[in-house]
Every structure is written in structure tokens, then in C-alpha cells.
Length: 270
Ligand SMILES: [Zn+2]
Image (tube, rainbow, N blue to C red; front, side, top):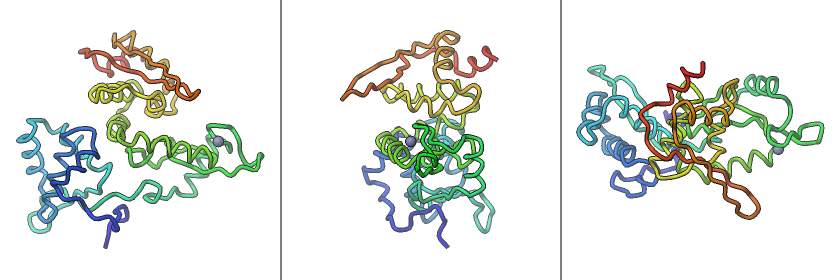
């Protein structure tokens, strides 16, 4: 009776294993994960989870939900009612399967993605007319919180699909930051949240990730949204360009903290 998303081949780490830290961008998420690993046999209730979170970090409910989402980017954590008293508990079931194996994209969704985005690779424009096979792939990977819905799917040729997967794998440490940004309702907030997460890590944000969280909507244009964050909110966002082996790497860095939040850009610009 294993959960379909659980990788049953992979043994769970010991709660004291230092490698748990490497999975997360924040100490808090690592602590949350350790707590669930310690309580495998007696999963904590929602109340115990919040109490622990407050005791360790003095943080509110919102923060503890965010930690749970981060833990869920690597592990399957089930919330369910406990038999007996009916209290909600969080039970860590195991490692999450690698994204490619986790969810199959239904034929209907694939047809919808081809229908709306066209039968060509979204990166090079090649398709069946050039003898190239296309694959429907997640734009934001599932392991980073991307959903299996039409708006998060795109046709790619095999070459670009593999290239993208390799590129994302190299950025996997930032998965939790993307997982944090994606659920935000507007492109300003998604980009803003991503810049803040990278700022907290002392890093500059790759432009590819900004494009990824901006998403394909009428307001998704990342360049315009960055300009609005700069001029409407006065955020100090600096672009860096670095050329390595003939490839120009573009990253954006948010320099200092401002009190205005990205929600303001959404209201000002509407
Ligand atoms: Zn291609």
C-alpha cells in the first residue's frame, strides 16, 4: 500500500544526518524535515507541528506552512486524520520519486498543450515537419512545485528537453526558492519573491528562473515586470552579464531591502 509518489527503493536519512541540510536552502526547512524524520512512528499533529515551529524559530503559521512545502519538494508528507481522535497529523512517508517518474501527463493534456502552443519545439521551432519528435514537458519542474496543468506544459524536441533538464538539475539547490515563488498569484509577486529568496541566500538570480516564474500569461513579460519592480517600488535590481565559453550568463540581483512589497506593483500597474 505504498503511496504512488514515494520512491520505495531509497532508504530515509537518519534525522541527525548532516546531508539533510544540503537538501534545503534554509536551516528552518532542514529543521522541519528533521522533526518529521524523528517522528516517523508517531507523526505530529498540526498543533504539535506549530508548537515545535514556534519553539524553534518563534515563527507564525504562515512560515510553518512554507517549511512544509519545502520539505514536500523532496519527501512525500501526507496530512491525514489520525484514527481514534480524528486529529490532523503530518506523516512523512518517504523520498519523493524523481519528477520524470512521478506523474504521467495524460493524453488529453498533451493534446491540449499541442493545440494551444503549436506542434513545434518552444525553444528551436523544429517539429514533425523536420522529422523531429516532440515531447510535452513541464515548464516549471514538478519537484519545484510546478503543476501538471496545461499552462505549465510545453512541447520541446528531445535535444532541448534534455538540455533543459540538465540546466535545471544544475540549479536544483534553488528548487525550494522556486517552489516558494510559484504559488504567488501575480508575476510581480512571483518575480519579487524569487529575487528576495536569492537575496537571502546572497546570490544573484539567473534570468532563466525569472522567466520561469513569470510564466506564460499576458502579464508574464519578465523584462517589463522587472522594470515595474524597479520604478514603481524603487527596488534596487542590478543586472549582471558574464561571458563564459562564449555563452553570456545573465543574472539579476536585488540589492537592498525596501518596505514596499511586490503586491504594490500589481495594484499600481492594473
Ligand atoms: Zn528544440
